[in-house]
Length: 276
Image 1 (cartoon, rainbow, N blue to C red):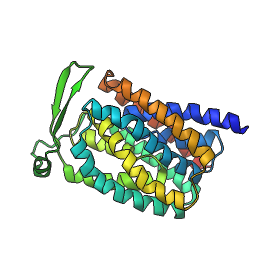
Image 2 (cartoon, one colour):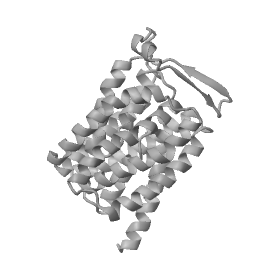
Image 3 (tube, rainbow, N blue to C red):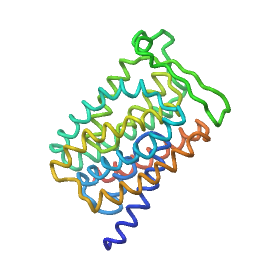
Image 4 (cartoon, rainbow, N blue to C red):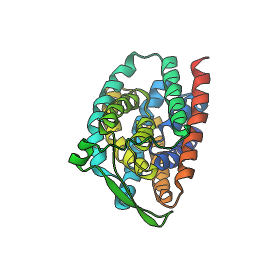
């Protein structure tokens, strides 16, 4: 593959990744990393480093739109991000000691867990008891849902669980280059009682900060290759801005099924690579 062919392919794949990543709040890394490694022959560590940079682009492209539409729960995002950034730094340092095939298998397990959690019957598991921490921090929110034509208000539950999972999400972000949204979106939706659109928007708001924390570690190790990271970042940025414009008018069920489909396909490919 010539450098021009590589650049064009990376742009196209990354645009698609940014589009889907912004719709489901996972940063696009779940597509970028498998595509770079399985289709374009980039080493897993270099692909993760490029994906970390692309996650920053996804957040930049989508978060501003979601904030302006008042879908993002900024107070909740800032609280959870305290745990996520700590985890991201942990994951970025640990990544240097995990073998390539191990990263493939960890990645596949993360994706499988997320898809399963979103497919579980019974909808969200909401704790009816009030959450004093959420009340004290005023984390509850509301937004206008264009697909429903009405305001949607919600209360936040299980804030401490959200903080614990956010740390794990940060570790996954630094270790795997996936932005952490594959953990945060399900726990916010299934356990904390937050509508899927608000989960997506809030996750996009958080993932850029998370990725920036771990990106510095990858830069210092020399694993960010400009000829790989640059087209990936540009493609993801353009895709993320496009996806952010589409989200408001989409049905929640459509967003959920897109999310599950992307996870399932990526998990199968990463399992196959890890067991080679």
